Length: 421
Image 1 (cartoon, rainbow, N blue to C red):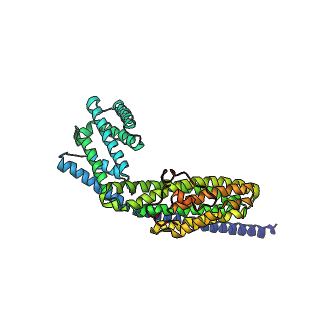
Image 2: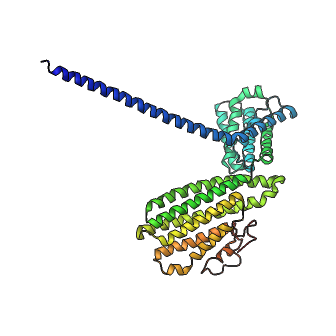
Image 3: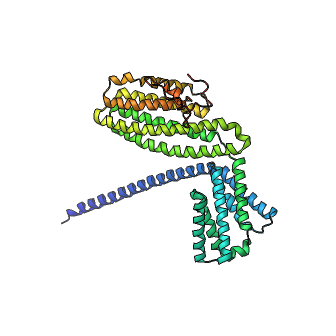
């Protein structure tokens, strides 16, 4: 009967060892999890730090504008508590560099209209829940009548609700009468002046965005070339996702450019930057066309790979397109004449000659036809007009005399179009 005891002791020791190992493993896992949390926390802090650095100057500018608006209404106009002046200035400027003067006016005027509507409701009908609903209804309808922008209507409704919602407390503490609407107009006016006179960097930001946009579009062509060379659909699916990202960057780049274009148009001291800004706008217009062309190219490529497999004869054209876009991106960033990009685009156009299609399957010929459009887009991006770009594409007949410059982007570049080859 004494024999089983060692076995029980052995089992107990084994169980204890297993428990200890489990505890050690759990501690190790917790330590790993803790390290991961530290890494994620550090990443979040770094991202937050970048946001702070990117928004520091705009926030300081908006705070200064709010102070100026309040001081002007209080000291110059004699309003005892100009509550809406700093609010309007802060809302109009926000905390980003993308301060489009039209939007500043839109937000400021909308806020002022809302304050006026709220004031009328408060004086005529008093304060309360149904009065607030009436103020919001009127502000929304009048906002849609006066302006098509959503910001205008939103600001009208929000400020009307603030005035009516605060009711008698607002009247007692801030002061009644038309001074509130005047304060809002003062805040909007100060914000507009700050947006025009202290715009930040109106050249490097749009140039950087356009340069990044061209680089990301070049990546799309790289993925297309890889998919056509290998006959693998996976890179083509990656190209589709990349193209969606390019479209988002295009939207952001257009917003940044529009802000710079409006400021340069309104600020006499910056009129000298007009040629660069106009060229960047031309670039964005042509890139938008190129994105639509690449969408068609991507659909065609997926169909061709499904039916034929690898198509190396077309893949090298994608590589050439990507190289031209990379060269153009560098020229935009450093604002150099895009000589290298134009040479590569001319080589691409030469490789898209019609006789090349004679030795190809009709599906490959369809891809080559789309690539001819890509070559035109790239040549125009380097500064050529559409007519001049077509002259470098073999097998292209003359276009009508009224087409050059008839559409935005089809004219030659005013900056790089004087050296046409």
